[in-house]
Length: 333
Image (tube, rainbow, N blue to C red; front, side):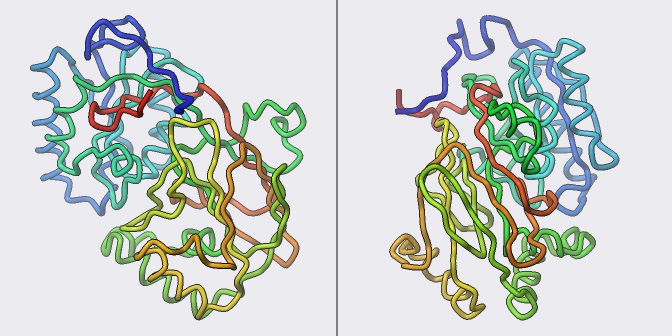
């Protein structure tokens, strides 16, 4: 059963009983490598679609990292009824960190290199088609993940209410190293291909250091951990296939292998859906997880962006975000 809460509304244009008439549209022109003129044209068409449905939008264009978070926070303070993120996973993450704890809903118009949230909710990549879904979407109050250094205030208090929030996926080890090492200029030019190129390079150069994973359910040493809130991970892959945005848990995948050839063998296992049958891969669900280095530096990632080094703790923060969910993606109640 989903643990998210549907916020009862009078119509598809309301959130929490309040009519949606003015939305902040936060747009990252660097997402997806630019193509600014075409993207702006499509955004203008999306704004017209929303206006025909009674939702006027104010366009806020980011110029540097952190802008989307500040725009989202200011949109809450300014009394906007809705915030719409137009970009990739990194833009969504920044906006979530500005909205977390508020009751201003988030909607998505995907336009970046990758957008796991859009895939998870079945939102089309075309921003015009995506805009048509927003007026009929329904607001769900969902949990978020958070990550903070071990010994931080949330860990000491046990309430998981600080640290950096993430919506879809966190991780440490091999995927953290890939994201940390990714050349941003190559990413802008090559898009998703840049991740594959860096992945091949990491298979040759990465040491696969071990680190300690601890939760109330189990403890083990691993070289990779994926902390999922969504089934989708990145590109065509689904790793945490038992995860759900509408539950107050992570699904955790931990890999103990250290051989790069073994890691390469995971690709067909992922593609054909038998990764869970591998003896060197463990799956479980939890709401709290500690990851501590034991064998050198281990990098982390949140929603596909570099997020520092171990040790860290991952925690679920219940009822942290209102998410606009398209009709066809609504969870069973």
